[in-house]
Amino acid sequence: MKKVFAGLLFVAMIFFNVVILKPTAKGIDNSQLTVPDVTFYYDGETIYNDFFLKLDPGLIPTYKKMMLWDYPYPIIYTAFLLLMGQILFRKNLFSKIFFIAVFSAFAFDIAENLIQFYLINQLPGVHYNLATMMGIFTSFKWITVLFSLISVLVGLTREGIYKISAVKQ
Image (cartoon, rainbow, N blue to C red; front, side, top):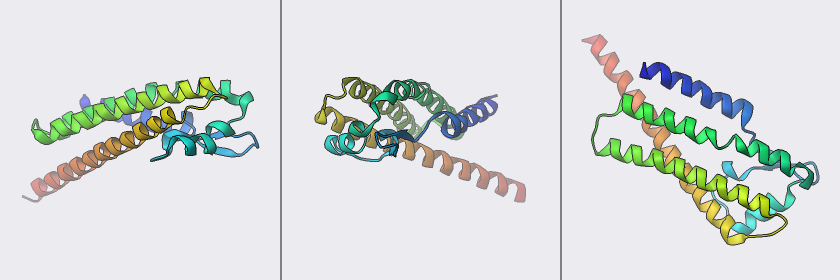
């Protein structure tokens, strides 16, 4: 049952990435701006100059509605990773580190989303320090997500190797 639920969560993650979450927003000059969520590191001044100050003011309400989808997404990928951790890892020190990383990724993602929403609501006001904090949260989110995903891939590979060696015996 856990594997079926993990499969459904994986399909939901793919659906969110392909259909719902957009990695770009429309700029003032009709250009495509990369949203802060997909950038590894940025400081406050850079993200304001490259994103917030270039957002088309008429499309900000639409962008804020799109951002609302970025709140359930961390719940989906966190549930997927936690379930995969339960399936793949025994209770040991590594599994504890894995679960801490997964929960940390969730917390950093939600914090990043809340700050981004606040900063958009404050436009045309500029808050460089808060935007820099958002960049730090984004970087920590990506570090913990990548650690978690690599751990799952290693765990799946290990399980596959065990099954192949069991078949050969």
